[in-house]
Image (cartoon, rainbow, N blue to C red):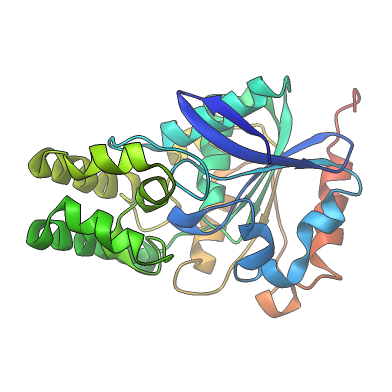
Length: 287
């Protein structure tokens, strides 16, 4: 599978189908891999890639610090995910693309549209992650990781990662850099030697500033209100994908369509067809 070096970090990606470009931001939280479109939650039964790639060039990728992509120990910001996405478009020679986010991928898609509106033809925000319980889960996950580091040290984190294939979402003790530790021995050695106090500042800062609100993180509401990007919003319906998060995006995005379908009615027959209907309707004349 091909890789591209973006912002100094190796990014694993895949291109399937043909037609206008559709850059897809994977679901799965801090374990957002290109496979997540086929294996995670509601996406497992929708077969979105199979359907969308019949009319669009679907670009899926492992988010930095996920899957086989690389990473860097730093205070991670939404802007870092934006840099990865736009850098990948640059590497592929794509001037603009439709964006689709699943789960937490909606936050990055919206942040890209705010930072680079000229690169975004439209957005599909599917089951956006957000809500008060989502924020609480994220902060608890980071706190559990830092508690393990304080008690056992970063060397113990490396040893724990070597003995499990679980990611940060399922076992917070392994931390947000677990996949890079697992796949890059040099990174793992450097990680184990980091100053624990500085590391704690970076991790706590990531949690506080990335998940700073009880709705959809990633872009400021005033910036969303100023966007002219055509957008389709599809709601989720659980603790991590609160319906209120989707309604918040509907309120903030002036050119949004809201597909008011309960999750049970979002099926392989209905969901891909609704997305394709939206994308086909907003295609630029040049497409």
